[in-house]
Length: 73
Image 1 (cartoon, rainbow, N blue to C red):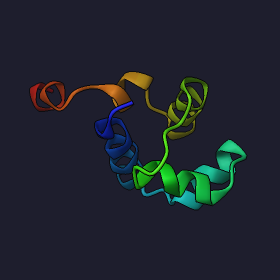
Image 2 (image 1 turned 180 degrees about the vertical axis):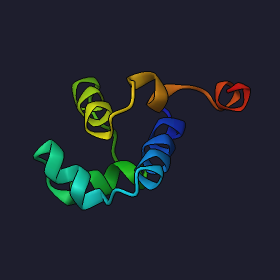
Image 3 (image 1 turned 90 degrees about the horizontal axis):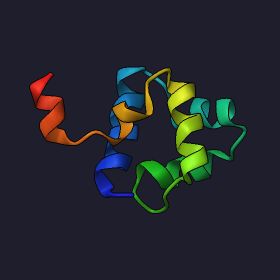
């Protein structure tokens, strides 16, 4: 997955006013794992990406869409 995806996770967390720790709790993951996703140190699996989207209450497309698409909205 590209860096843009991980940046989108960080942006959506901020938009939802949700901490890395809260997302980790919702996913049953260690907060250090979530921290690695939002700092581009590690990437979530596709299955985990779907769980992240569900936890953030956004479609997966919201996390993977390209910036050009964002600007057209």
